[in-house]
Every structure is written in structure tokens, then in C-alpha cells.
Length: 194
Image (cartoon, rainbow, N blue to C red; front, side):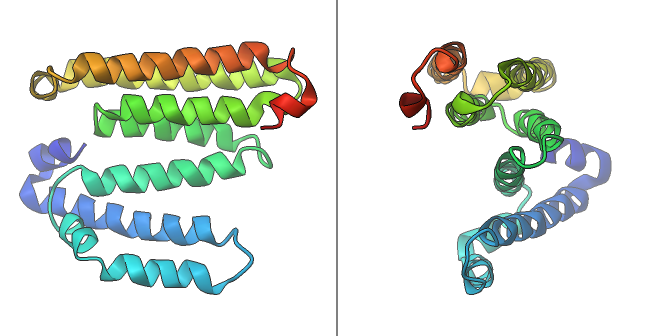
């Protein structure tokens, strides 16, 4: 996505997108930590993040890392909200799609996100709703992978050595996700609560 910004608006646009992503990442980490009981932690974490030279470097350099961080933190926020407010499931799926469009290696992160989500949803009822949410999440991931493969062939060439490992890890996590979802209704309550 940074490359698209660079093609459309030049280096300045790509740098601005990264600065914007840095602000979003900062806001997302503060928002995530507001769920703690102590109100000092979010602001302290934000200050520590602002003081990190690596964070400052990536906020002012047109690379995909800052946008990746922002998308992952926003996905974390959507993930936390989805139990209380089901509409956040769509936002979570959309962030999986955006993450995949941003970086091809997101496929493994998305597999991990979906596995954690399946484990968390193991005790949720009705199961039909959980399956519908999972279909939307899988569809978002598949759409992102297909679009990413079509749009970023140079990236695939650069990662061709690790591509089998990356896709294998994602496939294993996605298979584990389906297994957890399939077994969730059949497991004793004490096991599904882990």
C-alpha cells in the first residue's frame, strides 16, 4: 500500500501515509491499553512509543512496517470489541484484508489471528453465527492473498525462498482454526474455556 501511495503521489505521499499510520498506531496502542484499570498505562505506553528511535524512523520512512503495526494494533482493538459488539467482526475481517494488501507475509499473522479467534470463540453460542463470522474472515483473507499475488509479483519473487514455509505455516494455522471450530461444540465446557 505504501508503494501505491508512492506511485500515486510520489515519495512525499508515501511518507505522509507512514506518518498517518504512525499516529494511528499510537492511538491504537493507547486505545488498547485503556482497557486496563490503571489510566496511567495508556499514556505512559504512548510516551514510550513516541520516544523509540525505531518507531520515529519508520514513521518518517516510506516502508510498510509502520502501516503494518497500525493495522495489527487496530485489528487487536477490533478483536477485543467483537464479543461485546458483533459489528466489530466486519471491521476485524476488513483489517485482515488491509493487512494482507499491505504485506504478503501477513498471511501467517492472519492465520494466527484466526486461530486465536477460534480458541476464544470455542464457548460462543450460537455456533452458526460463529461459522458465518469465520467464513467472512476466511473470505477476507483469501481475497487479500489473491489481490496481493496479482498486484505484487516483485514481492513474491523476493520472498520465493520462504514462500513455502510462509504458506505452510498459514495453512497449518488455518487448518487448526477449522479443527478448533469443528470441535468447539463437542468439547466439554472446561476444555473449551481455555
